Image 1 (cartoon, rainbow, N blue to C red):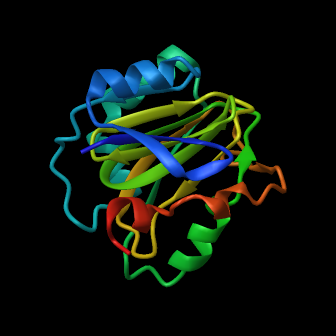
Image 2 (image 1 turned 60 degrees about the horizontal axis):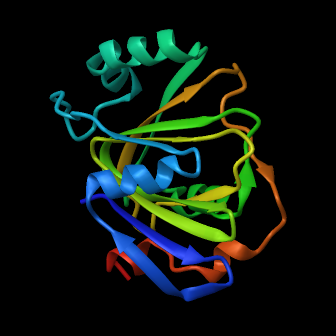
Length: 185
């Protein structure tokens, strides 16, 4: 189940949790973040590659491409047996921004987007069927856990794709990780 946990950015020990879809979307909308739940019901094998995933969701992809002018679409997929899972996790764990807005559709699995805005940290547990759009220049980080298990379709308006502008802040290390928030620790 999707969940939103909101922390004061100076107090990672005090938080509010929300699990109702409308509460999550309302609170995220207030900070400019789009959150939707789609049907992730296309039949895919456990080892489906990028081409198979993009083909299965081509109608949804076309609709978003037409609405937002995306030039690049790809799939990021990680499983617990991936040999570079620790390196890939570390890449996203530091607070950063993007010049472009960031849209992710979770075809399978889960991960947490941490959005740092207005003196709060919004930890959004995204699961299969969730679509999240983080506005350009919004500070955030992403945690997939120590044993990642997810497949996401990523959308970009620039051909360069994922380019992070790291803030140098160590704030991400002060908040509960994916494993701690989901009980996988």
